[in-house]
Length: 231
Image (cartoon, rainbow, N blue to C red; front, side, top):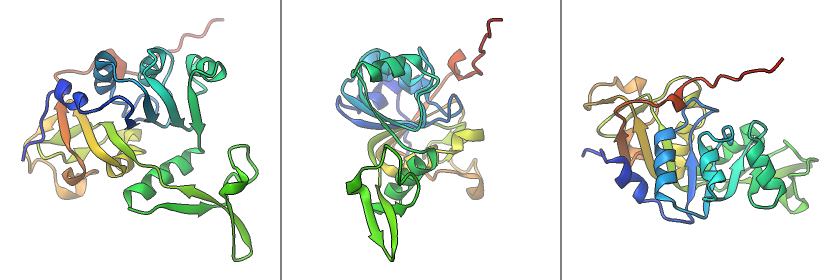
């Protein structure tokens, strides 16, 4: 069955208040077109789960700056002064996790488990006493699995059935998020007929994908960000 949808149809399935995972590792793998449509449609009260907050005026920061995001679950926001300001002003709730822990929380949800034990961050400020557990003479932190209602992903290539191929560091979080979300929406600039990919080249099987949006072209958002340094 073809899973092709228009971008308007795909994003309209997301209600206000939804928990949404968004792929990407900085710029690579970030689904900018899906984000722009979410910005246009205006859903509010969103909880976003992403490795980073992109940079101010870029990617998910546009949703944050537009007041559509109530909570962000992430690993760092150091490149986004606007997100830092909103957090310090109490207008944006941010939950931080070490990068590997965030990835494992998502992977654990996709595997159908409820959580895992770790000794990472036992003495950090992000660990509460109630999160600790003593087992076989050692103290561990209990990390709960992290799932979502939706995942928005960018694939370098896809077919009509939702089989996906990622490129570069986009592969870091996207395959995990595809498994951990109830409804997966993918954008791609290269849509092929089934059978185009050899099975061993597929990173995410179509069984995990609900909607595929074909992009006519990629905007400048997908390029490398040029930082001008003042001397």
